[in-house]
Image 1: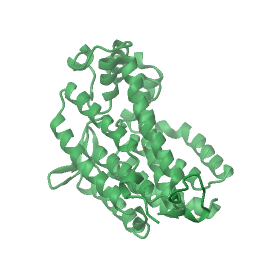
Image 2 (image 1 turned 120 degrees about the horizontal axis):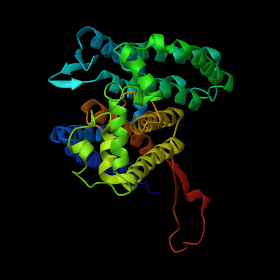
Image 3 (image 1 turned 135 degrees about the vertical axis):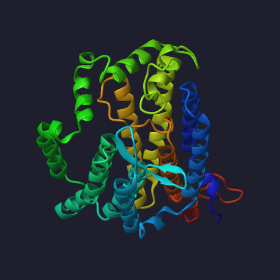
Image 4 (image 1 turned 180 degrees about the vertical axis):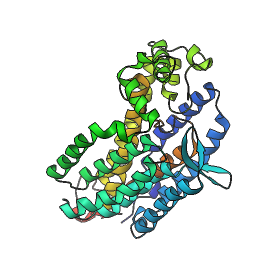
Amino acid sequence: MTSIPVWRRLDVIQPTAAGLLAVLGVMTIYSANADWARQVAWITVGAAAYALAATFDYRRLLPLAPALYGGMVFLLVAVHLVGRTALGSRRWLSVGGFPLEPSELSKLLLVVTLAAFLRRGLSLSWRRFALALGLAAPPAALILTQPDLGTTIVFAAILLGMLFLGGARPAQLASLAIGALVVIPALPYLLHGYQRRRLEIFLNPSSDPLGAGYNLLQARIAVGAGGYFGQGWLHGLQGQLGFVPERATDFVFAIFAEQFGLLGSLLLLAIFGTLLVRLLKAAAVAPDRFGELIAGGVFVMLFVQVVENVGMNIGVLPIAGIPLPLISYGGSATITTLAALGLAQSVVVRRRVVVHQRQAGYPEVFDPSAVRLTF
């Protein structure tokens, strides 16, 4: 009997889709006159993180989950104490000259922590449901008070998605929905001034076209100017003349849509869709509950970011400052995304595989003894 080589277990479609997105991201960042060379360096570091995570046996993270959670909270507390402030938020730590954004790394660490906690059983008791909420609450509160509403939204989505995958009962999920409805009336009083203004502008962007509504209106104009086929790479007045603010980060999709049009945008979304489908497949073939929840959590993490970023660029969702994975400029986000994909690849590589070995000379004869499961 022979075992299947590791290289044949790889999901080659997943890194191919990620690579295509990274290339399109560098092209768009270059056209937005941002530091594309640094983005290439971050992608290179992220590719190394991908390879290490894919090679690493994800099951060895299980006993490390408490330490990873503690490290996540420590980094988020450090941001409040010694972090660097930019654009009105304190989000970054300087680590050897590298601007580390712990809130980005915390997304993946939350996925691993919740996967370790929720792996037992197919349904959640109310006690474990409450404990899961308690695990997510401290880091979410630390991120919200930076303030970083966008990452907090991603945190909430990861929690909700993993509770669903972890076997939360309908009554438990309904309790979260009721809690959200109760909080909504108080939301304007909980948000910072600029966050409240963003919500007001989403409801009526023309109320302040040269102030708070400027970003959204310019992004809409850029998307509409792309038409069906786009203005062409390195063309487009909104992007090239700098009318769209934050055009390499939050509003990078608007720049992409202006240059490549509706068809190019649909192709970009198709690549994202392919990547997300491969993550679902990784969850489906996982050899254990821990791997299933890790792959499912990474799916939720990326799905929410894609939906929110594209939605706010075209004006159907409020502006929340969420980057578009592998397209937006940023080191912490890029490296974390590639490391998360590598961890999902680690799950795929270690899946159970059915091997059917035919008897020599009788290819049409099925021998049940030749069928075995490998890891």
